[in-house]
Amino acid sequence: MNNTQPRVSIGMPVYNGAIYLKSALDSLLNQTFADFEIIISDNGSTDQTEEICRAYAEQDSRIRYYRNEQNLGAGWNFNRVLELAHSEYFRWACHDDICAPELLEQCVKVLDSYPSIVLCYPKTIVINEHGQQVEKYVDGFDLRSPKPHERFAQYLKLVRFGHGCHPIFGLIRIETLKRTARMGIYPSSDLVLLGELTLHGEFYEVPEYLFFKRDHSKNSVRAHRAFKDRIAWYDPAKKGKLHLTRWKWFLEYLTAIQRAQLSWNEKARCYLQMTKWVSWNSIFLTKDLIKATLWPFLKPFINLEVGQKVSRNA
Image 1 (cartoon, one colour):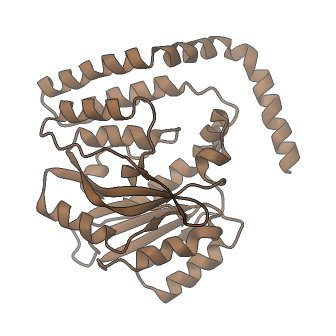
Image 2 (tube, one colour):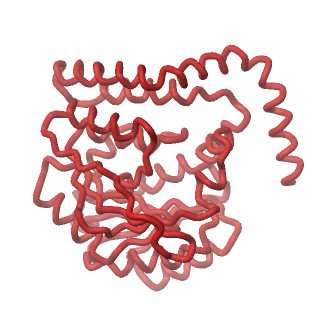
């Protein structure tokens, strides 16, 4: 690794994030651990995001700002900041979240001390648009078993009924992260990525509340309540196209297990865990198959709706 590189890269994908952007950047620049860089990838913002980012980059050399003139979707942008990073550790950061000053220091200390740990994250407090506490979220991703299939099984149970996925904003060993499928361009790809990371090493939860996740009306889940809109948020090219979400997750999990450098015994045990996953998701998998069967009849109405939205937004 190049010794001139900072030890930590923080990747911030952003699109029209001007409202909370300054608070997010200030919380990162105020970290007690200073050997880091911030890589910002602006996905064609039309608000004051570019102006704010350029002003901060001029004031602090640790900030690298990149702008794409066309919005290629959240999935592309999350991977873009990772591609630009060459440090030892990596962390994704959203433009609307806040970090306590000790977050990086605490996580670096853990990863430096325990080579078996691939991801370290702190406890989470959910805040509202005004920065007021809403709840102390129970993440529960302290997966310390030395056996990959046991970590994977714990993970599948944790995400069975949905999850806030805050550990994806923890500190991750970049060499491990770049051996995965990275962030997929489909809904809940962050959870699937966490599942793949459990196959590579342990997760550690710092017991202090150092991460403040902002919940507001314009975040991705609330702003795109319809699943088809959320798919387009990840990848605009998929708007109006058939997407079998649960089958996509299933295939990605199987591929992750196949790709991981595990013994055949461990892989077999992980595949066995997926039989439970299929049982838990059987209704949704069936619905996906029904949707695929009916798609030739539904597609004209979907395309009509998409066309109407384009006309209204023109």
